[in-house]
Image 1 (cartoon, one colour):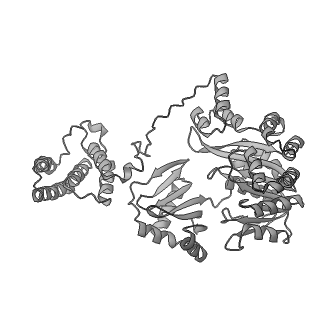
Image 2 (tube, helix red, strand yellow):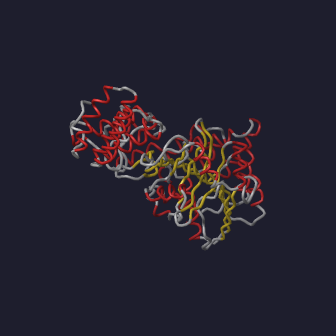
Length: 484
């Protein structure tokens, strides 16, 4: 198994959603929404990183990357899973993000969504436009896959998906499912969507309403009696409606309002929040196309949609504020997490105040923790040799021996060496870290090497300190403790 495949396997084993490979950084994974640097692994040089990423690219994507400097594709690792990949260039070189796509499609009832009943109702429609929206990484693809899987288990239809790239792989059960990938099976979204109308579909899943032409065809497809599922990158359900209309020139917007009012079935805007007990849970804003909602869209009164959501609670609609507040009341997420994810922070604060829920809004720096409970370091720290050396020295020589962590100290000083640190001080810290790990033989050899270098450089201050340290290491004793 090559290096990249080993990293992808590690990503899945640790339950991470994403693997980030950036030049001049060590690999990084996202677990439960938080970034974690894999500091035990070496940094990725620009040349090695680009070569590793290029080895995964299909021919088309190699050409696209050379021309445009970023590209999207899918990558499958047998026995591990599928990954949605984006490769790009930044100021340090090539970088890549691998989004883990589970091989097993989650059942809708197993996602733990408080709004799964609404999703089931939307899956029972035979025509119209259903939009799942939210920022990148909000679980849109998982929700859509679960909905298509429900249809596959409960209906006998022809489903066509158009994706870039294909993420979840659906096996035909009661439905016939054809999955097409842009740049592999079709040239673009709009062309595939236009062709789908001649392929006897009942349901079409459109990976993204990316441009004006694709959006217009999607609306027309929904109007002709098909059920269309699509995604957009907007933060709220009401913003989704405005976003669709605003795609079009001013002289066409009245026509599009009418078309959207006639075809829209529902909008689910979701975001993922960190659970108090670990993992993540989705909060959602739900807009359903009641007669009042359709009238607001048709009559250019989209500013009244938030009110329609508030008054439509009995039919399944809900606002982000209500969804977040309920998750806090149920003890699933913290008030701070809800506040961070809220789009209307003032309304949420007012609800907290009325319910007597305390909210901590202080922007204090929160130290990140490793799995073993030790403090994590920032990305900037992990690329600063001076910071790495200072941290490693403290962890090796703290007078409070209970605060020492030889294993972590060794990781940090070795990273500093990988970044180019080669002086007497670096060797002195390395020896202290080795001794803190009870590797006194290596500590002795490293201290001797440091003494030799100090003599060459006539560094008398370090020479005296090193000779004292060497005496301890020869006796199989760690550093006695430095003033820090």
